[in-house]
Image 1 (spheres, rainbow, N blue to C red):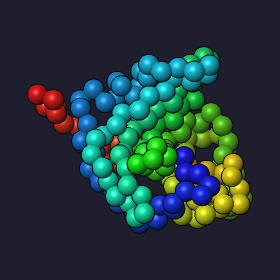
Image 2: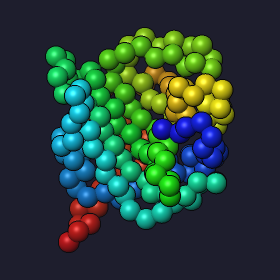
Image 3: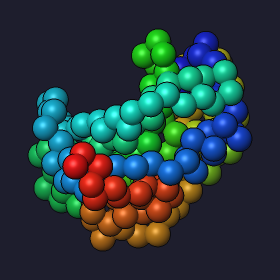
Length: 173
């Protein structure tokens, strides 16, 4: 997530990264739906996409990521799938993420409150600039209500559409 004092990723540059075609292997969904890394509460993983992209003052490698609650009584509610950029010094910018309906969300700059519904976060210049004054805020803290997801697999379908994922059947053949 973008942090206080980091270079600000301009909106147009972030949108260009979101729109770039992302070529992934046929098993990309299984990798993100079955993350091997677990901490006390979550299973999570990253799928780096290779190469280096430039976005305004920031250069780095794009990655897809997932975070799923491990002990969730309703595992179809608590999940996040997204697209990020890791810059050359190891800072992560979350560009876009699809969240399940497990919690309400507040757009802190605007004061809008979303009920516990599926929603999509996007990084914005406005939120990144507010980080200088509010270090606990996130650069991708702005969210809008998305279409309802039937579960994690459906959220991945939405992510694929939003960030232009292309499955390359013979990527490693």
